[in-house]
Length: 480
Ligand SMILES: *Cc1c(COP(=O)(O)O)cnc(C)c1O
Image 1 (cartoon, rainbow, N blue to C red):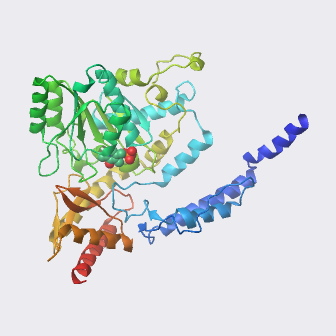
Image 2 (image 1 turned 90 degrees about the vertical axis):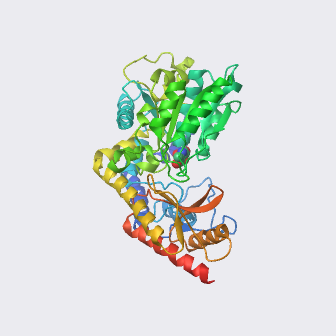
Image 3 (image 1 turned 60 degrees about the vertical axis):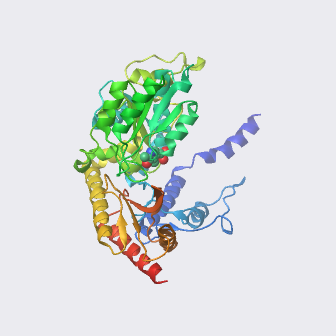
């Protein structure tokens, strides 16, 4: 037995590399990361590659370990190379994600120290730090001290958290569930529908509220619909507004929607995954007015604070409602001290053991201060406006509405042939080139191209390059 233990210990001890090996591993990984960052300026924003036919893709693991060089070479050749290159400043599709360096260092420290950030008693400093960040976000939105929130893995889990809270608060799963009505628009993000489904709310009625010619929810139409539903004996319950849709970047008229929510006693939930954190900059504040009047709101630091993927946030104005939906007591946690000092993430979310994700948010904010974030967000808005003006003037192009934030929709009107077909060929050719990455959507039945500016590496040069590529490619296609 003792011999066996010694043997096992010997084998298991490689889980703890000695200091010299630790340094070597760190140096190799850091060098790999540096090479990646140094390559970004010239790397394509998109590289088409199918998984089939790629013979180098063999991530197999075995009993024996590999050299770090071999593992890193595999990442370079088979992982970092294909698909969308998110950290590229020329990634201008979907809602771009960031990946600031300081955040990676925060993750490194969070993993090394591995604080158990689910419960206050286990890591008071970590939980306090996260709560300070949440209170900072609450202040930015205009929520009172009596609100509470949670740092989630992203916007989708943030939606789910808010929607479950609203469901429980209104007893929307009770006997009357088939009379409960949810109001949203055709531009509401699909993650909202997914959350409603996961929360068991498929039985509720869903109304698609008309939008105006800028794709914003029409509050008068909402008012009429809610009123008619109420008179028909239904129970208007949940209104979903967007502070920046993914489709077109439109910000719904939040104050007017709050008026409707107030007068009918509905829960107002705002999807601010993309747009809410733009409140940090002057340019966006007027259009975002009214966020403070919602009952819950989500935002995505992994979009609008340029963090690497893995951090969203939810805020709920009535913290008792959030606590009552997610607070649970297990037999084996009964002997934990019952402290009221700080709320614990485990009592406010579906998670128990969790990543100490506050650190990847706090470290960059602490080291850099807020000023560069505000500047970068103002820059994104101005870049979108610059792109809009340039495309408006460009021969043959037609632009959608003036951007509320940093998404612009546009398309090319060819001299002959089908407009949708032409634009589909246009985007395909731009993507095959891969220098810039853009995406498309459908509005009012039309296929349109969209440009979303949110990368922290996207500056004037990158936008000029995108404009140039679009104009050139459209010309080429016209002449084909
Ligand atoms: C990205 C996004 C979501 C979903 O958030 P994830 O972080 O991807 O889960 C929801 N709504 C809007 C408007 C978004 O842009």
